[in-house]
Amino acid sequence: MHMLRTHTCGQLTESDINKEVTLCGWVHARRDHGKIIFIDLRDRYGLTQIVFFPKPNPNVYEQAKN
Image (cartoon, rainbow, N blue to C red):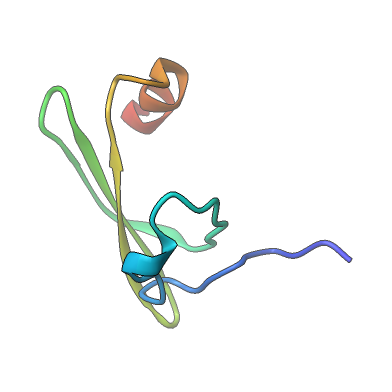
C-alpha cells in the first residue's frame, strides 16, 4: 500500500526533528529572503512552514525557488 502522507500539516512537533516525513497540501505562501526560502504548506487540517537553505542540498533549494 502506498502512503500519501505520514502526517498532516500542523501535526509535526519537536519530537519529529530529524525524522523523514511526507506531507501533502498546497503552497499557501512563499517568501524568498535571498539565502533562505520559506514555504507555508497548507492542507485541510492546518499549516506547516518549510524552510529551505542553499546548503546542504542546493538542488532542493533551486526547486523551492521555482
